[in-house]
Length: 281
Ligand code: NDP
Image 1 (cartoon, rainbow, N blue to C red):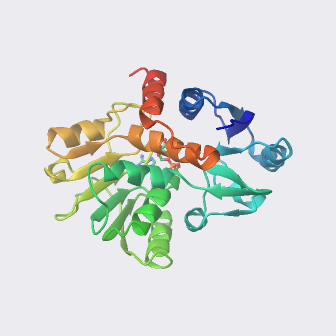
Image 2 (cartoon, rainbow, N blue to C red):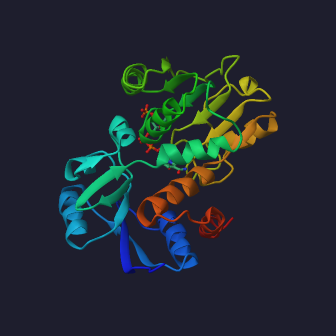
Image 3 (tube, protein in one colour):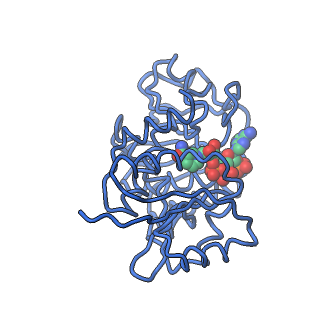
């Protein structure tokens, strides 16, 4: 296969120093013999439009979008995939001819990770949180025919907005529960997901969930990838739950972006090794 020379992808965000996805991408480009580069570029909100126009002008093949630009970037694109449109957030840009389009690989990455331990179809799922990650995960779970979704969130308006999207356009049975004190996981729930930022870079942070309701057999997932085993996951493991860390989601979202840009299914193990090296695990 003829490989193009020096194709460039970029991650636009703020701040974006020390981006683990860059490590994974550069390692995978090298592994697959692609002379591609992945740049991590700090872009402030007022310059986002210019940055995207710059990507177009300089012929970038694509890129990732991180906080705080995942929603705002959409106005500068030629369109989005259906799933990203439903989420109203984009984390991956790609070219289709002259068009620059937006995809969201966060939720897809999570579902791919979940499938290693459980098929989401028909499952009763609780998602803690209603921010960007929760929204992406909830939409992809709905598209994977999960049984029902309960959104538990501190801020009611944000939680209800996601529930309305799920009940409406996604046509999945969804309900909202206000998060007050320790949340008790109801009997019959198959999968519990911490999609909040509680625990990120804080090994001692406690997710307010009643520990006695973490029953054996429950699949408990955390989107937080650093530390790789959060306090929440450690507790779930101790209580006999199947624990799923945030590293799998992080690797998978990168695997999917790589495939979108290059057409090549990358070696996920190479990317996982790069991530673990980056995180010093
Ligand atoms: P957002 O800021 O969009 O949402 C944060 C969510 O966490 C909100 O629901 C917020 O509730 C909730 N929250 C934060 N602090 C608390 C608290 N003390 N008590 C209760 N709820 C709280 O963030 P994102 O959704 O973009 O990111 C969430 C996490 O997901 C981050 O840790 C991020 O690193 C991780 N992530 C992981 C990925 C991976 O590949 N593993 C990919 C993408 C994100 P409220 O609405 O009430 O403010």
